[in-house]
Length: 567
Image (cartoon, rainbow, N blue to C red; front, top):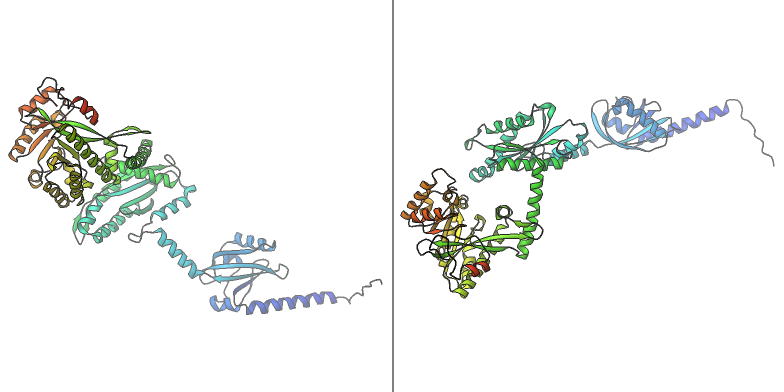
């Protein structure tokens, strides 16, 4: 059956469309007004039509248009275009309500065939404030209020693209631990706050300042804001060299060491720049402290070498791949062998021969010197026991000690080794340098007293180059002083006077004296004239493995040229 359309009277269709539109608008308005969410209604041009009761109740009804609400006309047009295309609109933004700014979570959609824009919003200002507070706390140092490590790192990364060339300064307070140890951490904290204030005054608006941790600070400063990075570092040093006045202790003077690296000359990422500046700072400390030093590529090579050595040193300790060499010590009166000094040697398969001057300081720095020293002591006692049994020799074995080994457990360890190998205590000598006694003197002295009570010989090594006083020679249970080789070889002005004075003092104190570094016959004759008790040096015998001494020295057929001395 054919379909026939019976047209409506003129104007009826338009009237129906208007009625439907009004009903739709009424439904939207009823839904809009009764919505518990905070809602705003804009027309297709971004003009505000209305706010619902929930929004008006909380923020009033003096809201401007969409441009003002967002604070960005371009963004308002982007939103309108986005929603017209049927794309979802979900975001978080700081908006203007007509009275104040608030953070809102916003969802947007079109109504009435894209004639009206409905924004449903949630006030997240408190949450945002909490997040900002957490972010602030995470990026700032609680003690000084400065940026912390994370804060300055993030700040530099966020603005890296806009930076001109800049310098990164790594600043470390010299001797700060002494302040904490002497006056307590409360005074130390107060000093850190005072340091932070003084650094802020020096940096001002020129760059970023952060407390990196402990007594370390980082400064990032663009070159256009300063005349010269080195001069600026010196300016910081002078600023911190001025005395600090603290109520609890009065006046305090400090120094600092600064390392610098440059962007983009040295590196383009913050982590590398910090590492480089840190290396340069440590180089400044090695060169005397209270100074600055700029990074150079050789420092990276040195650091790589250090890390490689540390790894291989750990492996060598586990595998016990070290070796002891023994250098003769000759008795000047009897013209016979007095004993040996045990000296460690290390030949690594990958690194080759590694000098003790390189790996011993590293072992002390890392704490590996304690197990290493224990191995040296054990191995030297084992060798001494073998020689006692094989040759019936009653000479002394001398072993060097590190400061880290001077612990309460050392004396019981030594006593157990002597008992295990049947060695009389009088045949073992332990050597320590003058610098060994600088820290925790009372603790170190107690340890030496415990060792001396076992009947051991205690030697003071490298005498004349450290910080010991004559009172310490009386106070410590020292039996023998070893004069540093630099005096024997005449490296110091007035070396002969020092040699003769040392012998005279030791004679008065009833201490034996060993001259180290004897390399010529004339030196040997002079020391004999000065009535030295013992001598040691390349002229008398180089350090050698045990088997070479057995082949050459214990035969009693080898003697020192030009003398009557036999090994």
